[in-house]
Image 1 (cartoon, rainbow, N blue to C red):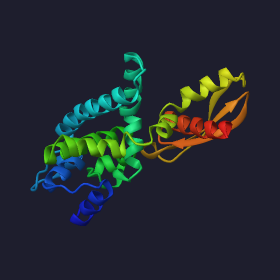
Image 2: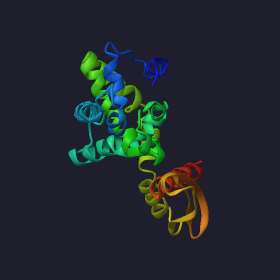
Image 3: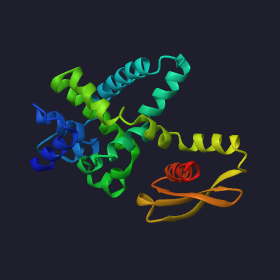
Image 4: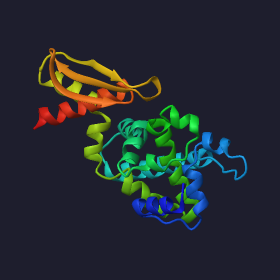
Length: 228
């Protein structure tokens, strides 16, 4: 990771660190930290722990004030969908965060840069890093800008499979199922292609690093087609 890339990422997230080492730590996976023989760097795990707590608080407050008629159980479910692993990875990919993560050679070779779990962890670690660097207000600004913005659109993507299932049942469209069309690439870097079908008629196609991710994309595409 060279300084230019750190500056580039700071421009993308609209926040410039006073302590650049905090940003570097937030981007450092344990596999990279363990490979360093001389210049040892801390990994992101402690920052992720902090960022996770801050994200839960800020998202809870946001939902509480913006959904005045929503019951506790509904708020909990809504928050869970916003801060879950796949949702955070989706938000992070929107500005290319995965390109800046520091990975060890082995983790890189086994597709670590595409794993939702790692990308989501780094997203939370950056929240923790901003909090330590400038406090709650700046961390909250970051969360609102990149996670709590355009929620209606994001919710459609996060819950695409559930929403599609409910839509198909409500409209009596038929039987919904997902069919694996192909899987390409080596074991550590597979791409799955899945079709969403109603009564064996294709209504959407998706691809992803896991079958679940491919199904979600297929459901999202199907929803956009069916609702337009």
